[in-house]
Length: 523
Image (tube, rainbow, N blue to C red):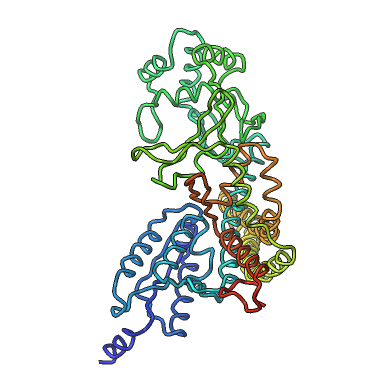
């Protein structure tokens, strides 16, 4: 009977879904992060009289959009939005922090649409904010900055991993999965590659056969199949495209090419440099290098405002570039647009996010204040990782004493100490990544604001490729209609543009009464 009363009481409560995300299998197995976020959500719901009707747990990175349970949650909320108000639909998400719900822009565009169209409320529990369509511009702006900072943090972690692999390559060690003909092994606490006794001789034969010039890559592959050329794990025959990749890879004569840099490898080469060079001569004789294509500055950045098709670029008379609708949905009335005019209007749009000097100082101060919560999180993670590292070190010290006293064997000491030192190395990498990400958090945020001040100047001086990168960072899904650019800004640049428009309107207003709008400057 008491359960029925409790259910009836909750029927009139605000309904919400709880979203929990961890970014690695290790966190899932430990369970601490998931349980902690769930506990936080339920305690928050109890304090605020909110009924959690569903929970969505995501165990993967949020750097890329298209997460399974995130998509399921969005679909559930869209169905709820179609219900009548009398049905008390679910229109809220409870999530621990901004970076838990996502670190990419596409998902936040979806959430922004749900807030504006369906009245969705996002409760950011630890940050103490509730974001919805009626939130003040200041709250939305800071929320947008957190989105970019979360994306930057995720990118920074990836950069640290890339940096580690680059440093390993510089030391002459292959930093990732071994290429065909080699296997990954561990030696002296380091992961290296060595020749695969089964397939390395066959790889050497591939080079020798092809160097004769008697075979095409397709014929060579067929010949190698008869000699047993298959993938080690699957047993499937190696494709001709992979054979071509093998013939072009300098690793087989001893060099490591990583991120455009060449390093002398410490692994045993499979062939000589002379044989590799001979194979390249044969390859180059069969395949002419492709001519570099012209790079269009704005292709892929704008769509037709009439029919929604993409705008493509083409050159007339060898020197004039025009953009036109592809017309995939039928004949379109949109006329050709000169590249110079498209460039001019993009420059005007960029000028819309340039802040007044006083406004820039205010937002920079606000960003530094918002950094406090993020720094506390980093400090907590650094403390946890250091404690784990010290625990392993204590185990190693005690085990070393036990080995000296003869309590354990040399073989057991080497095996366990090797395992613990590998764990320490992994912890140290995570520790370095968190410290680096924490140091760059606030400075990257300030740089984003500085970018808004210099965007137009940079844009005017940049190459076509650099222009595309800048515009793609600031804009999303821009349209061209009737010879006019209809820009759509990414978060938080959209809030900046709206704020600037409101600020200029108030400055130019001739009446003493404040205009009927709000913006984050307040009074």
